[in-house]
Amino acid sequence: MSTSSVDRAAGPASLPAPDETRWPGLATPPHSPLRARAAEALFRRAVKNLDLRVTFPDGTVLGAGGPEAPEMRILRPSAFFHRLGADAKIGFGESYMVGDWTAEDLAGVLTPFAEKLTTIVPLFLQRFRRFAERVQPAAEENTIEGSRSNIHRHYDLSNDLFSAFLDESMMYSSALFGPGEDLTQAQHRKLDSVLDYAGVREGSEVLEIGTGWGELSIRAASRGAKVTSLTISQEQKVLADARIAEAGLSDRVDVQLCDYRNATGQYDSVVSVEMIEAVGQSYWPTFFATIGKRLRPGGRFGLQAITMDHDRMLAAARSYTWIHKYIFPGGIIPSVQAIEDGMRDNTRLKLAGMREFGQDYARTLKLWGERFHQRWDDIRGFGFDDVFHRMWEFYLAYSEAGFRSGHIKVHQFGFADPR
Image (cartoon, rainbow, N blue to C red; front, side, top):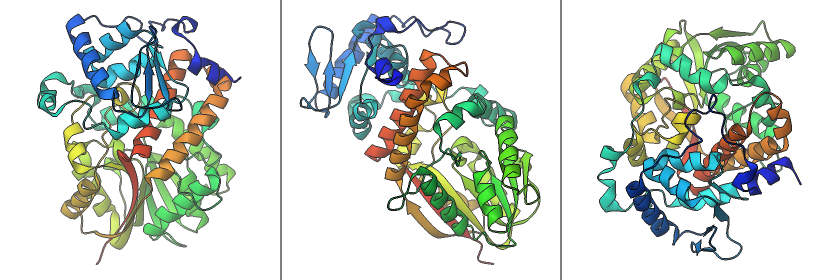
Protein backbone atom coordinates (compact mmCIF):
# COMPACT_ATOMS: atom_id res chain seq x y z
CA MET A 1 0.00 0.00 0.00
CA SER A 2 1.37 3.41 -0.97
CA THR A 3 2.00 6.23 1.47
CA SER A 4 -0.72 8.27 -0.18
CA SER A 5 -3.38 5.59 0.21
CA VAL A 6 -2.52 5.24 3.89
CA ASP A 7 -2.79 9.01 4.40
CA ARG A 8 -6.08 9.28 2.55
CA ALA A 9 -7.80 6.51 4.46
CA ALA A 10 -6.35 7.34 7.84
CA GLY A 11 -8.29 8.62 10.80
CA PRO A 12 -7.40 11.86 12.53
CA ALA A 13 -5.38 10.09 15.21
CA SER A 14 -2.73 9.32 12.60
CA LEU A 15 -2.31 12.99 11.65
CA PRO A 16 -0.08 15.20 13.80
CA ALA A 17 -1.46 18.56 14.87
CA PRO A 18 -0.48 21.30 12.41
CA ASP A 19 2.77 23.06 13.26
CA GLU A 20 1.71 26.46 14.62
CA THR A 21 4.73 28.19 13.09
CA ARG A 22 3.83 26.92 9.61
CA TRP A 23 0.05 26.88 9.91
CA PRO A 24 -0.92 29.54 12.47
CA GLY A 25 -4.39 29.04 13.93
CA LEU A 26 -5.20 25.96 11.85
CA ALA A 27 -5.04 23.36 14.64
CA THR A 28 -7.89 24.88 16.67
CA PRO A 29 -11.28 25.08 14.95
CA PRO A 30 -13.33 28.25 15.44
CA HIS A 31 -16.14 28.11 17.99
CA SER A 32 -19.55 29.48 17.03
CA PRO A 33 -22.38 27.09 17.99
CA LEU A 34 -25.11 29.04 16.20
CA ARG A 35 -23.22 29.26 12.91
CA ALA A 36 -22.15 25.60 13.24
CA ARG A 37 -25.79 24.50 13.63
CA ALA A 38 -26.79 26.55 10.60
CA ALA A 39 -23.90 25.09 8.58
CA GLU A 40 -24.87 21.55 9.58
CA ALA A 41 -28.48 22.10 8.53
CA LEU A 42 -27.42 23.52 5.15
CA PHE A 43 -24.86 20.75 4.62
CA ARG A 44 -27.37 17.98 5.38
CA ARG A 45 -29.89 19.60 3.06
CA ALA A 46 -27.31 19.96 0.28
CA VAL A 47 -25.87 16.44 0.30
CA LYS A 48 -29.13 14.53 0.44
CA ASN A 49 -29.50 14.85 -3.36
CA LEU A 50 -25.83 14.49 -4.32
CA ASP A 51 -24.45 11.36 -5.95
CA LEU A 52 -22.18 10.40 -3.06
CA ARG A 53 -22.28 8.92 0.44
CA VAL A 54 -21.49 10.97 3.53
CA THR A 55 -20.81 8.84 6.60
CA PHE A 56 -20.52 9.90 10.25
CA PRO A 57 -18.88 8.18 13.24
CA ASP A 58 -22.28 7.24 14.67
CA GLY A 59 -23.18 5.29 11.52
CA THR A 60 -25.39 7.95 9.93
CA VAL A 61 -25.21 7.93 6.12
CA LEU A 62 -26.39 10.82 3.96
CA GLY A 63 -26.46 11.36 0.20
CA ALA A 64 -28.22 9.91 -2.82
CA GLY A 65 -25.35 7.66 -3.92
CA GLY A 66 -25.46 3.90 -3.71
CA PRO A 67 -22.83 1.55 -2.27
CA GLU A 68 -20.45 2.24 -5.17
CA ALA A 69 -20.69 6.04 -4.93
CA PRO A 70 -17.68 8.03 -3.68
CA GLU A 71 -17.62 8.21 0.12
CA MET A 72 -16.93 11.29 2.21
CA ARG A 73 -16.10 10.20 5.76
CA ILE A 74 -16.64 12.88 8.38
CA LEU A 75 -14.41 11.91 11.29
CA ARG A 76 -14.80 14.95 13.57
CA PRO A 77 -18.29 16.35 12.94
CA SER A 78 -18.15 19.12 15.55
CA ALA A 79 -14.87 20.58 14.24
CA PHE A 80 -16.05 20.15 10.64
CA PHE A 81 -19.28 22.09 11.14
CA HIS A 82 -17.65 24.83 13.20
CA ARG A 83 -15.11 25.39 10.41
CA LEU A 84 -17.88 25.30 7.83
CA GLY A 85 -19.99 27.73 9.84
CA ALA A 86 -17.15 30.21 10.32
CA ASP A 87 -16.43 30.46 6.57
CA ALA A 88 -17.64 27.71 4.25
CA LYS A 89 -15.46 28.75 1.29
CA ILE A 90 -12.34 28.36 3.42
CA GLY A 91 -13.40 25.97 6.18
CA PHE A 92 -14.34 23.09 3.87
CA GLY A 93 -10.78 22.83 2.56
CA GLU A 94 -9.16 23.53 5.92
CA SER A 95 -11.17 20.73 7.52
CA TYR A 96 -9.69 18.34 4.96
CA MET A 97 -6.19 19.66 5.59
CA VAL A 98 -6.39 18.80 9.30
CA GLY A 99 -8.27 15.51 8.87
CA ASP A 100 -11.78 16.43 10.06
CA TRP A 101 -12.97 14.52 6.99
CA THR A 102 -11.34 12.31 4.40
CA ALA A 103 -12.07 10.37 1.20
CA GLU A 104 -10.45 7.62 -0.81
CA ASP A 105 -11.72 9.11 -4.10
CA LEU A 106 -11.35 12.81 -3.31
CA ALA A 107 -12.05 14.14 -6.81
CA GLY A 108 -15.04 11.81 -7.01
CA VAL A 109 -16.44 13.28 -3.78
CA LEU A 110 -15.81 16.88 -4.83
CA THR A 111 -17.31 16.57 -8.33
CA PRO A 112 -20.98 16.35 -7.20
CA PHE A 113 -20.43 19.43 -5.04
CA ALA A 114 -18.96 21.26 -8.05
CA GLU A 115 -21.88 20.21 -10.25
CA LYS A 116 -24.38 21.76 -7.82
CA LEU A 117 -22.24 24.67 -6.68
CA THR A 118 -24.73 27.38 -7.62
CA THR A 119 -27.63 25.74 -5.78
CA ILE A 120 -25.98 24.32 -2.64
CA VAL A 121 -26.89 27.51 -0.79
CA PRO A 122 -30.66 28.17 -1.15
CA LEU A 123 -31.51 31.11 -3.38
CA PHE A 124 -33.21 33.05 -0.59
CA LEU A 125 -29.93 32.98 1.39
CA GLN A 126 -27.67 33.86 -1.54
CA ARG A 127 -28.89 37.47 -1.47
CA PHE A 128 -27.15 37.88 1.89
CA ARG A 129 -23.85 36.50 0.63
CA ARG A 130 -22.16 39.86 0.28
CA PHE A 131 -22.73 40.57 3.98
CA ALA A 132 -21.29 37.25 5.19
CA GLU A 133 -18.42 36.50 2.81
CA ARG A 134 -14.87 37.72 3.18
CA VAL A 135 -13.39 39.76 0.33
CA GLN A 136 -9.87 39.54 -1.03
CA PRO A 137 -7.47 41.49 1.17
CA ALA A 138 -5.93 44.72 -0.09
CA ALA A 139 -2.46 43.27 0.56
CA GLU A 140 -3.06 40.76 -2.26
CA GLU A 141 -3.98 43.39 -4.86
CA ASN A 142 -2.04 42.78 -8.07
CA THR A 143 0.08 45.89 -8.11
CA ILE A 144 3.59 45.32 -9.42
CA GLU A 145 4.84 44.64 -5.89
CA GLY A 146 1.71 42.72 -4.93
CA SER A 147 1.95 40.49 -8.00
CA ARG A 148 5.56 39.66 -7.18
CA SER A 149 4.55 38.66 -3.65
CA ASN A 150 1.54 36.63 -4.83
CA ILE A 151 3.57 34.74 -7.44
CA HIS A 152 6.38 34.11 -4.95
CA ARG A 153 3.96 32.37 -2.55
CA HIS A 154 3.12 29.71 -5.13
CA TYR A 155 5.65 29.42 -7.93
CA ASP A 156 8.71 29.91 -5.74
CA LEU A 157 7.75 27.10 -3.35
CA SER A 158 10.38 24.79 -4.81
CA ASN A 159 11.45 23.83 -8.33
CA ASP A 160 12.03 20.34 -6.92
CA LEU A 161 8.37 20.15 -5.85
CA PHE A 162 7.09 20.96 -9.33
CA SER A 163 9.66 18.70 -10.97
CA ALA A 164 8.39 15.83 -8.84
CA PHE A 165 4.83 15.76 -10.20
CA LEU A 166 4.97 17.49 -13.59
CA ASP A 167 6.07 15.61 -16.70
CA GLU A 168 9.40 16.23 -18.43
CA SER A 169 8.00 19.26 -20.31
CA MET A 170 7.56 21.04 -16.93
CA MET A 171 4.30 22.53 -18.21
CA TYR A 172 1.99 23.60 -15.36
CA SER A 173 -1.10 24.12 -17.50
CA SER A 174 -3.61 21.98 -19.33
CA ALA A 175 -2.41 19.54 -21.93
CA LEU A 176 -4.35 19.00 -25.18
CA PHE A 177 -4.62 15.26 -25.77
CA GLY A 178 -4.63 13.54 -29.12
CA PRO A 179 -5.39 9.83 -29.60
CA GLY A 180 -2.92 7.62 -27.75
CA GLU A 181 -0.76 10.51 -26.52
CA ASP A 182 0.98 10.56 -23.18
CA LEU A 183 1.13 13.71 -21.06
CA THR A 184 4.35 15.09 -22.55
CA GLN A 185 3.12 14.59 -26.11
CA ALA A 186 -0.17 16.26 -25.18
CA GLN A 187 1.66 19.20 -23.62
CA HIS A 188 3.61 19.69 -26.83
CA ARG A 189 0.37 19.49 -28.84
CA LYS A 190 -1.01 22.26 -26.60
CA LEU A 191 2.07 24.43 -27.15
CA ASP A 192 2.00 23.90 -30.91
CA SER A 193 -1.67 24.89 -30.94
CA VAL A 194 -1.17 28.17 -29.08
CA LEU A 195 1.94 28.98 -31.14
CA ASP A 196 -0.09 28.37 -34.31
CA TYR A 197 -2.77 30.74 -33.04
CA ALA A 198 -0.02 33.33 -32.53
CA GLY A 199 1.39 32.73 -36.02
CA VAL A 200 4.87 31.82 -34.71
CA ARG A 201 7.21 30.66 -37.46
CA GLU A 202 10.82 30.97 -38.60
CA GLY A 203 12.03 34.53 -38.12
CA SER A 204 9.18 35.58 -35.82
CA GLU A 205 9.99 37.87 -32.93
CA VAL A 206 7.92 36.61 -30.00
CA LEU A 207 7.01 38.01 -26.60
CA GLU A 208 5.95 35.45 -24.01
CA ILE A 209 4.13 36.73 -20.92
CA GLY A 210 4.67 34.17 -18.16
CA THR A 211 7.74 31.99 -18.70
CA GLY A 212 6.87 29.02 -16.55
CA TRP A 213 9.89 26.76 -16.76
CA GLY A 214 10.73 27.60 -20.35
CA GLU A 215 9.09 24.93 -22.49
CA LEU A 216 7.03 27.29 -24.64
CA SER A 217 10.11 29.40 -25.34
CA ILE A 218 12.04 26.25 -26.28
CA ARG A 219 9.23 25.14 -28.58
CA ALA A 220 8.97 28.57 -30.24
CA ALA A 221 12.76 28.91 -30.65
CA SER A 222 12.84 25.43 -32.19
CA ARG A 223 10.59 26.83 -34.94
CA GLY A 224 13.27 29.43 -35.65
CA ALA A 225 11.70 32.25 -33.64
CA LYS A 226 13.50 34.77 -31.44
CA VAL A 227 11.83 34.87 -28.00
CA THR A 228 11.72 37.39 -25.18
CA SER A 229 10.06 35.74 -22.18
CA LEU A 230 8.89 37.59 -19.06
CA THR A 231 8.55 36.17 -15.56
CA ILE A 232 8.42 37.60 -12.04
CA SER A 233 9.44 34.32 -10.41
CA GLN A 234 13.15 34.14 -9.63
CA GLU A 235 12.96 30.37 -9.08
CA GLN A 236 11.32 29.82 -12.45
CA LYS A 237 13.86 32.01 -14.26
CA VAL A 238 16.78 30.03 -12.83
CA LEU A 239 15.42 26.70 -14.03
CA ALA A 240 14.08 28.07 -17.32
CA ASP A 241 17.49 29.50 -18.18
CA ALA A 242 19.10 26.14 -17.38
CA ARG A 243 16.61 24.19 -19.49
CA ILE A 244 16.93 26.61 -22.41
CA ALA A 245 20.73 26.35 -22.25
CA GLU A 246 20.52 22.54 -22.15
CA ALA A 247 18.40 22.70 -25.32
CA GLY A 248 21.12 24.80 -26.98
CA LEU A 249 18.79 27.76 -27.51
CA SER A 250 20.20 30.45 -25.22
CA ASP A 251 21.05 32.56 -28.26
CA ARG A 252 17.39 32.57 -29.31
CA VAL A 253 15.64 33.04 -25.94
CA ASP A 254 16.03 35.89 -23.46
CA VAL A 255 14.26 35.24 -20.13
CA GLN A 256 13.77 38.51 -18.26
CA LEU A 257 12.75 39.09 -14.66
CA CYS A 258 10.17 41.68 -15.64
CA ASP A 259 6.49 42.45 -14.99
CA TYR A 260 4.38 42.49 -18.15
CA ARG A 261 3.52 46.14 -17.42
CA ASN A 262 7.17 47.03 -17.91
CA ALA A 263 7.56 45.23 -21.23
CA THR A 264 9.15 47.13 -24.10
CA GLY A 265 9.71 46.55 -27.80
CA GLN A 266 7.62 45.43 -30.75
CA TYR A 267 6.91 41.84 -31.73
CA ASP A 268 5.27 39.79 -34.45
CA SER A 269 3.59 37.52 -31.90
CA VAL A 270 2.61 37.57 -28.24
CA VAL A 271 1.81 34.36 -26.38
CA SER A 272 0.58 33.74 -22.85
CA VAL A 273 -0.46 30.44 -21.30
CA GLU A 274 -2.55 30.48 -18.12
CA MET A 275 -1.05 33.66 -16.74
CA ILE A 276 -4.11 35.90 -17.08
CA GLU A 277 -5.69 34.20 -14.04
CA ALA A 278 -3.06 35.91 -11.87
CA VAL A 279 -3.54 39.39 -13.36
CA GLY A 280 -6.55 40.50 -11.32
CA GLN A 281 -9.79 41.88 -12.75
CA SER A 282 -8.93 45.54 -12.20
CA TYR A 283 -5.71 45.06 -14.20
CA TRP A 284 -7.20 43.23 -17.17
CA PRO A 285 -7.47 46.44 -19.25
CA THR A 286 -3.76 47.09 -18.65
CA PHE A 287 -2.91 43.48 -19.58
CA PHE A 288 -4.89 43.62 -22.84
CA ALA A 289 -3.61 47.10 -23.71
CA THR A 290 -0.03 45.91 -23.18
CA ILE A 291 -0.55 43.14 -25.71
CA GLY A 292 -1.91 45.63 -28.24
CA LYS A 293 1.02 48.00 -27.71
CA ARG A 294 3.66 45.30 -28.01
CA LEU A 295 2.35 43.87 -31.29
CA ARG A 296 3.44 45.17 -34.68
CA PRO A 297 0.73 45.88 -37.26
CA GLY A 298 -0.55 42.55 -38.50
CA GLY A 299 0.66 40.76 -35.38
CA ARG A 300 -1.08 37.88 -33.63
CA PHE A 301 -1.79 36.90 -30.02
CA GLY A 302 -2.13 33.32 -28.75
CA LEU A 303 -3.76 32.94 -25.32
CA GLN A 304 -4.59 29.97 -23.13
CA ALA A 305 -6.84 30.74 -20.16
CA ILE A 306 -8.88 28.96 -17.54
CA THR A 307 -12.43 30.32 -17.84
CA MET A 308 -15.76 30.27 -16.08
CA ASP A 309 -19.27 31.41 -17.01
CA HIS A 310 -19.64 35.18 -17.01
CA ASP A 311 -22.37 35.38 -14.36
CA ARG A 312 -20.37 33.14 -12.03
CA MET A 313 -17.27 35.24 -12.62
CA LEU A 314 -19.17 38.39 -11.64
CA ALA A 315 -20.58 36.73 -8.53
CA ALA A 316 -17.14 35.47 -7.45
CA ALA A 317 -15.14 38.57 -8.39
CA ARG A 318 -14.38 39.76 -4.86
CA SER A 319 -14.78 36.51 -2.92
CA TYR A 320 -11.91 35.30 -0.75
CA THR A 321 -11.75 31.53 -0.92
CA TRP A 322 -9.61 28.61 0.19
CA ILE A 323 -7.78 28.78 -3.15
CA HIS A 324 -6.87 32.43 -2.52
CA LYS A 325 -5.73 31.80 1.04
CA TYR A 326 -3.59 28.74 0.37
CA ILE A 327 -2.82 28.40 -3.35
CA PHE A 328 -3.26 31.45 -5.62
CA PRO A 329 -3.51 34.75 -3.72
CA GLY A 330 -4.93 37.58 -5.80
CA GLY A 331 -6.24 35.32 -8.56
CA ILE A 332 -9.48 35.50 -10.50
CA ILE A 333 -10.59 33.34 -13.42
CA PRO A 334 -11.98 35.34 -16.37
CA SER A 335 -14.91 34.48 -18.60
CA VAL A 336 -14.78 34.16 -22.37
CA GLN A 337 -16.89 37.32 -22.54
CA ALA A 338 -14.46 39.23 -20.30
CA ILE A 339 -11.55 38.23 -22.54
CA GLU A 340 -13.35 39.09 -25.77
CA ASP A 341 -14.64 42.40 -24.37
CA GLY A 342 -11.22 43.27 -22.96
CA MET A 343 -9.47 42.64 -26.25
CA ARG A 344 -12.10 44.61 -28.20
CA ASP A 345 -12.02 47.59 -25.83
CA ASN A 346 -8.25 47.83 -25.38
CA THR A 347 -6.71 46.62 -28.66
CA ARG A 348 -7.30 46.56 -32.42
CA LEU A 349 -7.12 42.77 -32.48
CA LYS A 350 -10.02 40.62 -33.65
CA LEU A 351 -10.89 37.09 -32.55
CA ALA A 352 -9.55 34.66 -35.18
CA GLY A 353 -10.00 31.29 -33.49
CA MET A 354 -10.98 29.58 -30.26
CA ARG A 355 -11.16 26.07 -28.79
CA GLU A 356 -12.34 24.67 -25.45
CA PHE A 357 -10.88 21.52 -23.84
CA GLY A 358 -11.83 21.46 -20.18
CA GLN A 359 -12.02 17.68 -19.95
CA ASP A 360 -8.38 17.54 -21.05
CA TYR A 361 -7.57 19.65 -17.99
CA ALA A 362 -9.42 17.20 -15.75
CA ARG A 363 -7.29 14.42 -17.26
CA THR A 364 -4.10 16.48 -16.82
CA LEU A 365 -4.90 17.14 -13.16
CA LYS A 366 -5.67 13.49 -12.52
CA LEU A 367 -2.23 12.55 -13.86
CA TRP A 368 -0.55 15.25 -11.77
CA GLY A 369 -2.41 14.06 -8.67
CA GLU A 370 -1.37 10.46 -9.21
CA ARG A 371 2.26 11.46 -9.65
CA PHE A 372 2.11 13.74 -6.58
CA HIS A 373 0.93 10.79 -4.47
CA GLN A 374 3.51 8.45 -5.93
CA ARG A 375 6.34 10.91 -5.29
CA TRP A 376 5.20 12.10 -1.86
CA ASP A 377 8.15 10.54 -0.02
CA ASP A 378 10.50 12.53 -2.27
CA ILE A 379 8.45 15.71 -1.87
CA ARG A 380 8.42 15.32 1.92
CA GLY A 381 12.21 15.30 1.72
CA PHE A 382 12.13 18.84 0.28
CA GLY A 383 10.76 20.07 3.62
CA PHE A 384 6.99 19.76 3.19
CA ASP A 385 4.81 18.31 5.97
CA ASP A 386 1.61 16.25 6.14
CA VAL A 387 -0.64 19.33 6.20
CA PHE A 388 0.97 20.51 2.96
CA HIS A 389 0.41 17.02 1.55
CA ARG A 390 -3.33 17.16 2.26
CA MET A 391 -3.51 20.78 1.12
CA TRP A 392 -2.08 19.96 -2.30
CA GLU A 393 -4.07 16.74 -2.46
CA PHE A 394 -7.21 18.83 -1.96
CA TYR A 395 -6.08 21.53 -4.42
CA LEU A 396 -5.42 19.09 -7.26
CA ALA A 397 -8.63 17.10 -6.66
CA TYR A 398 -10.71 20.28 -6.19
CA SER A 399 -9.42 21.60 -9.52
CA GLU A 400 -10.01 18.27 -11.26
CA ALA A 401 -13.59 18.25 -9.97
CA GLY A 402 -14.14 21.78 -11.27
CA PHE A 403 -13.18 20.76 -14.80
CA ARG A 404 -14.93 17.39 -14.66
CA SER A 405 -18.18 19.11 -13.69
CA GLY A 406 -17.82 21.89 -16.26
CA HIS A 407 -17.89 24.55 -13.53
CA ILE A 408 -14.60 25.80 -14.97
CA LYS A 409 -13.19 25.31 -18.46
CA VAL A 410 -10.04 26.07 -20.40
CA HIS A 411 -9.87 27.88 -23.73
CA GLN A 412 -7.27 28.77 -26.31
CA PHE A 413 -7.81 31.97 -28.28
CA GLY A 414 -6.21 33.39 -31.38
CA PHE A 415 -6.44 37.15 -31.94
CA ALA A 416 -5.14 38.93 -35.05
CA ASP A 417 -4.42 42.55 -35.91
CA PRO A 418 -6.23 43.22 -39.19
CA ARG A 419 -3.91 46.09 -40.21
